[in-house]
Amino acid sequence: DLGITLDSLTADIISGTVTVTSGGKISDGAGLTNITANTINLTADTGIDPLATSAANITAVTNSGDIDIANSYASTTTASLTVNGGSGYIDFTQTGGGALNITTAETFGGDITLKTAALSGGNMEIGTINATLLGNVTLTSAGAITDADSNSMITADQLSFTAAGAVGSSANPINTNVAEILSGISTASGGIYINETNAILLTSLTNSNGLIDITAAGD
Image 1: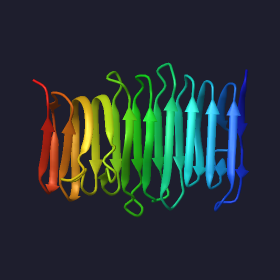
Image 2: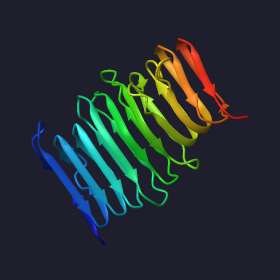
Image 3: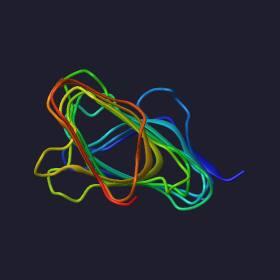
Image 4: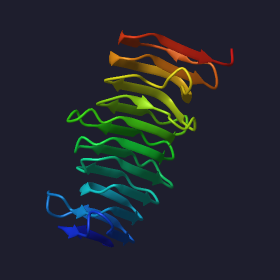
């Protein structure tokens, strides 16, 4: 059975790079922090099992399997996560309290779950999140959910989000192509701003201290 099992790989946290390429899975062999570096590049044919990492930049690609990563880096992490085929899911948690910048998170219909832990109010910056119209996307942010550079696009069947802050802004709303917002919640000060490409079903939206602004096209 092809694959690589990791116990501990450590490179310089300021400038070091760790690259792991597997013809099968990349698996956790220790249950602790498997990889520490400034930049981590992971490529696996059949999946990346739950890995514990600490890095500022993470790229993870599989051909068919899941991507499951918990990253304990305490400052901002930029992540690009891609499942190139099959029905694999993406589950990425920023556990160290730093902000999370998602440049890309894409599957071929598998669900996508992205989270920043409630340690220091880490925001979540959205780029391209694409579960196709078959998969669901769930976002949980310990701070705001933002689109600072106006390039966000979330594609999914159902979108759910929870933020301890604003979701988008009047100038830069979160752009979506989803059939339904199943649940949308802001628990702190700030508005919820969504710009939907097509018609949309709004099942539940709650803002404890701000407005809700949804723009949609289509019938």
